[in-house]
Amino acid sequence: VQLVESGGGLVQPGGSLTLSCAASGSFFSINVMGWYRQAPGKQRELVASITSCDSTNYADSVKGRFTISRDNAKNTVYLQMNSLKPEDTAVYFCNAKIKTTFLRAPYDYWGQGTQVTVSS
Image (cartoon, rainbow, N blue to C red; front, side):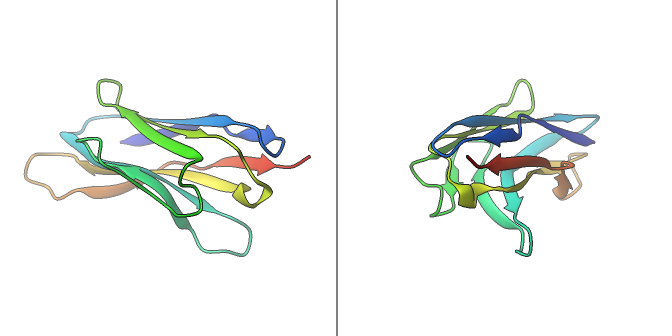
């Protein structure tokens, strides 16, 4: 199982970016998908998550600015980021809790990370 992210980059404050993360490989189902971020010198933190039933959860710092969504047919999760601030600068990691077989418990898989830099 692999998670491949795309969409990071450099953007000015107030700008927008959309991150994508696609899961590939052999697996039974994907439960929760989410995005985490880690800024230099800080711990990795949850940004947003979404269940297979489209129930969402957001960090307080991004509520109203970021939107998480998923396309179950494409095994892909998206993070639309609007009104970006310099403090949003971090490496963003995709996470998915995946059952590789029906009997196995969900296991955490991670993407390689994509840099988001918000700066003028």
